[in-house]
Length: 80
Image 1 (cartoon, rainbow, N blue to C red):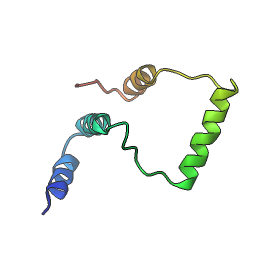
Image 2: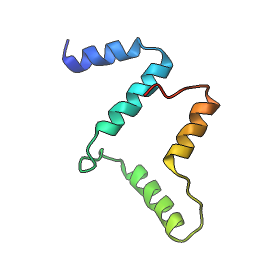
Image 3: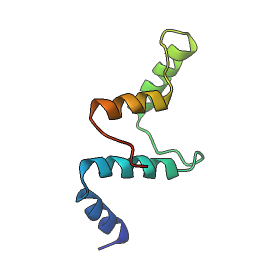
Image 4: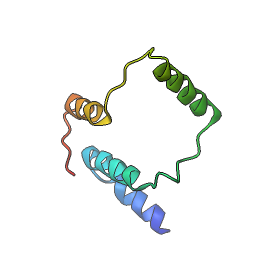
């Protein structure tokens, strides 16, 4: 079994809260100059939303505010 498979297998055994924490921690480790590959549909959606922001058709919120609301909604705490 590869290291990757071992990590995935071990991660799948974690409680949900710890899985979410792991996802958050791993995502924060990805360098800004190495974004993930995105499908055509995702790129179209990103462009649509970017256009809405640029033309003031939508309001934005800080990620920390959104994250806090989601954690509260689902009864999670930030273990980090």
